[in-house]
Length: 472
Image (cartoon, rainbow, N blue to C red; front, side, top):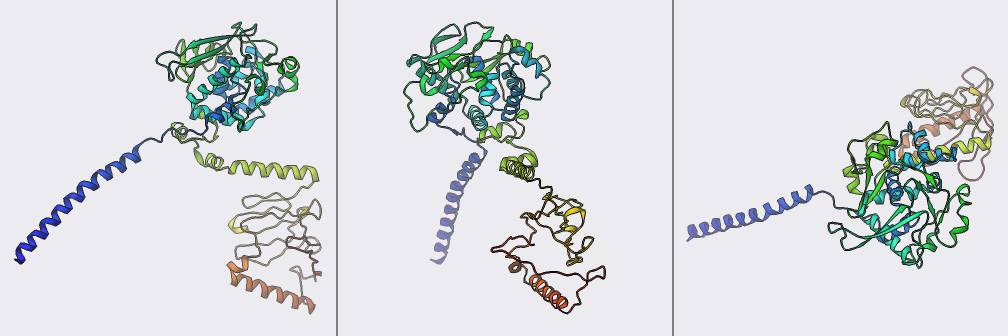
């Protein structure tokens, strides 16, 4: 009886083991398959946000619109080109593009200097430019669909029509299009060799806006380009002076596929030192090398273009540290310029000279150089001569920020003592307290001497209310 019971238990255990093994293996395979899958497309903007963002440019000619979308994926180059246009306001057309041939910008950005109004109008809108580029990289089909929605809305409002400056073409999307059986509205220059950049107020040309919570962006043209078109803005679309651009317009819109392309022949005619191979039209591809460390907004772009940010410096920019450091430097420079203050520089290593410099090296932690080149109140950290103080030519004077241009600037740092340092190192706090009491007894008995052998008079500092007050 006992033998039969043991055999039954062994058999049941084997059966259970087989069942468990059969269930675990598929689960592991499924988990591995999930890990190996590519990240899904990430929609970072809703249709309402895309329409809001694209409203200022949706009525541009197709070729100019396509190159503006390409250029927006390089926000750093875009900003520099806008500065160049500001310095050369009269440069335009193919000649302007040839003038910037030596610049390290992406060709799509160089092409926009042919139309200075575009860069002058949108160059200062740094956030808008980067968001536009992020949207085009992450959701190109949605961006192109947004343009078509806005054009249909303007056409319905009666503001988008053929005239002396532009030609409006309405066609059905091809059967193999991303969105077949839809209407495609194209905008082309009336004269292929002369381009008119439209100016319009989105709150007017699109009629009733469908998204009150997302009103369209509006960036009016700068005053330099405003006068030729000012009279027409209230009524709808206005046009400035026509620009002769034969080869500068080499982009195009693939409305059926939801992306943009390049006319190789026109492109090569103007980009003589950066030619591409082929004939006819070729698809445009984003060049991550010209992104110059600007982080990508979506997972797919980061994966497709080298994980978005490479190198330690670029990783710092991705985290936002680069922008924060630049802001701090600009603030410090502005303060120094407005006050005439020459001190306050902080060096990140040893051997830093100048008023208020703090060397962060292990051997010179906590050194503070006084004004006038003297090592006033120099304190050598790191365990060696912790209380060594070298006086100036007379006494041990201390200059702090606010006492004059030569004062030492105290700024927050990780190594600076603060109100909580005694809690983290009670032994150090006790030693400092004992040293201070010993110094006071020595001074009261007349025995306090400087390292040079002369007696030093140290008046008690008067402190104002609150911490961080300056010593007089």
